[in-house]
Image 1 (cartoon, rainbow, N blue to C red):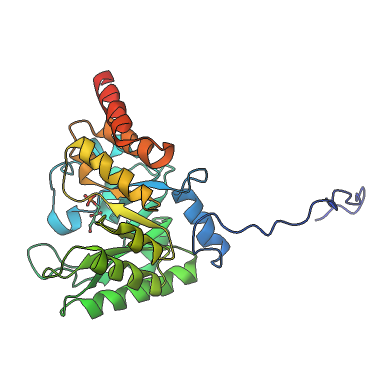
Image 2 (cartoon, protein in one colour; image 1 turned 90 degrees about the vertical axis):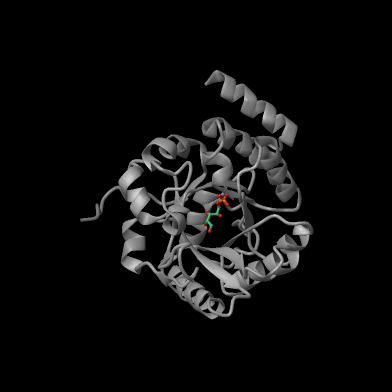
Amino acid sequence: MADTDDIREGNRFGLDTPASTEGFYLKGLNNTDWGLKNRLSRIFNQKSGRTVMLAFDHGFLMGPTSGLERIDINIDPLAEYADCLMGCRGMIRANISPTCSKPVCMRTDTGTTILTQMNDNVLVSEDEVIRMNVSAMAAMLSVGEKETEALTIANFSALVDRGMKLGIPVMGVTAVGKDMARDARYFGMASRVCAENGASIVKTYYTEGFEKVVAATPVPVVIAGGKKLPELEALELCRKAIDCGAAGVDMGRNVFQSEAPVAMIQAVAGVVHDGLSPEEGFQKFNDLKAQG
Ligand code: R5P
């Protein structure tokens, strides 16, 4: 029951301080709900406005690929250096401690592997998303493939409906048809289609002309790393993407297939958050690697 005595009159009304009308720090998201913004604020560093997401969802398509044979041994030690963990529910549940306070971006479309027709996927249930306490949900949106374009866009749109209902941001994972050029025109189109359908984050690939992809996508864009590159080249890729306006990376193979993954993720973070040049990042990588 509320106390009825010693009721004190308020006197800290800050009459000289107008209420803040500042916008949200991430582009295109000012008109979204509090819960959605709060989740995004866990994913994107509030000083740099960027993120280093650690992607380890590859197994749902390709099984135990190199570097992901044992998530508990290969990925768990990297978690503390990531801003966000991007994976599938089964791997997270089995291998990542529930005491880990890093936000999770959960892969929410599933149904096919590299052995059959790609992207013929359905969505994981809403209950499961809540049980996993996710900060974002990710699903593929593929343009240019007759068999899968309509399905992946419908999946994506349905996922955004769920996300908007729950206050959970959706990250669009772009793909283009196998006969299409992997260039700014098509990745730019896939990115834009994600945003048009309500994505709060778009993950795509760096290409020549990437600044146009970022400019035409009105929400934060992060890049996937793609196939394993020599470490310096991977850091150059990060730098170029950031310089074109990317809001970070969602990187997998170039981290967990590195000869020194713990050093590599910190070097990537140095480029993404601290403005390091690729060479400075590479120096950081080598220094950390030497320390063991
Ligand atoms: C692709 O569909 C997967 O979602 C990966 O998460 C994504 O490609 C990022 O991983 P990587 O940096 O290895 O390309």
